[in-house]
Image (cartoon, rainbow, N blue to C red; front, side):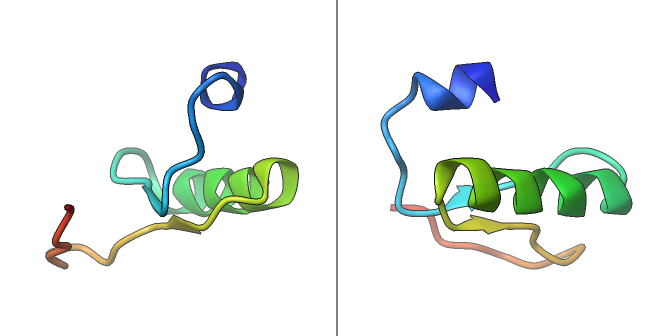
Length: 50
């Protein structure tokens, strides 16, 4: 979270590492503390990053 706080706010943050429960918790924390859109993609889901 300290590292993220010092980064410019992205359009969307994708959480792609970690156990499902931990990833969901991190997603919620990013949303709550930073106000950023954070997503945990489903296994095998493809996301176009521009």
